[in-house]
Image 1 (cartoon, helix red, strand yellow):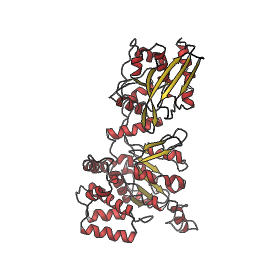
Image 2: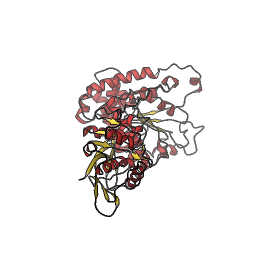
Image 3: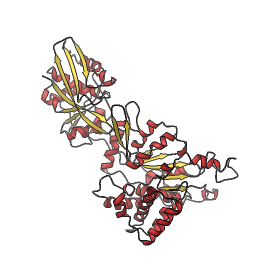
Image 4: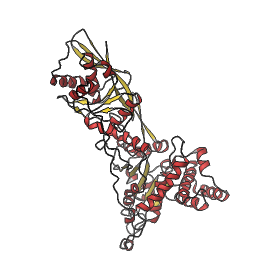
Length: 503
């Protein structure tokens, strides 16, 4: 008779159920694992053998076969150790087969029988809950997995504790969810002197999740402004927090199992590779755009990123997900982020200051900004120039609005959008609206249509640019608490399409 337990294999943030079958049969002594295992899974037999040896459990001198079903799904990672050990112990009648068959287990075994934490406990708990099974995972993963309240989660320190719990000799208490990360205050927008237009652009971007490009000379405050954007955004909703945490769980970024309501803020360096940005590598890990899901992706020195990296952003910006293609699988990760890009106007950075600019002005500016292709530039809803701040402004006391005041308006606008799109699949903010839905939420009167028609003709707006202006206008109206889009709202939206590229 074959003993069975369950574990998971990860395809993006999706955890697919894997049945771990163990058979001990007459024949030459051996221990084999089949079912498309990778190197880490194949090495599990040595870790399992050593862990059982420390517990004085001898393996039978027979042929031991472990099958990971379905066999056509690649099995990667060391988390298969624990389910393999449990299935084997059930097959040699140390554990009750019926109880082991009702479990989903994951965990890496140390040679002394201890359980080492692994990645992906939160998605594994979601999969276990869907199948109505109990989850067994290492102690360090218990606080993370316990956030899924629909399944029982037990987190032993070692294989011996797991055996004691399954046999009911030393039952474990259910794991307790980790503490939610504190919502600490960040830098305040009031500290930014001047740059009122850039502040307004950030407010609009935060309210409707509109992508923003800031162009200005070195030291004008682009990075300072971007660092204050998280303070304008509302906390993650419970559903968004769970989505974001599932990605971070697979990347090993969960802080002691705590799920935070703070939106992620990722700022990769411009030397980052394409797998680091969009995801990939040997095990198709999530990249920066997925780690910024439901949050902010800040890309400073935007034209300095490799052209190939920049062009790969085009599809994720539109679809909200990225597909990492491999020879044997296609892995999908969510990546609905707010892109904030910052750039100097040229390589020397002083295109607008003749006394400091290089000898190649203005050709250097055209060449430098030309690194951002037209299709990618077209995907920025807002484009704003960040001019140098006069020293006289720096010497003045701070008089601008606080982040809290701006965040209150953003929260009110987001609340309107949440009500507006309730029940609409995959649409949460104005930036997600398209087609007939956009026409419904952003109707224009005769004056508005005339203004937008003239702007489209003079600026050469593409169809994408036309619709993005409508979305921005809808957000500006939401910030003003207006049900209708007025000519003033539309004019302000058009004004943010004027700089650096047409369309």
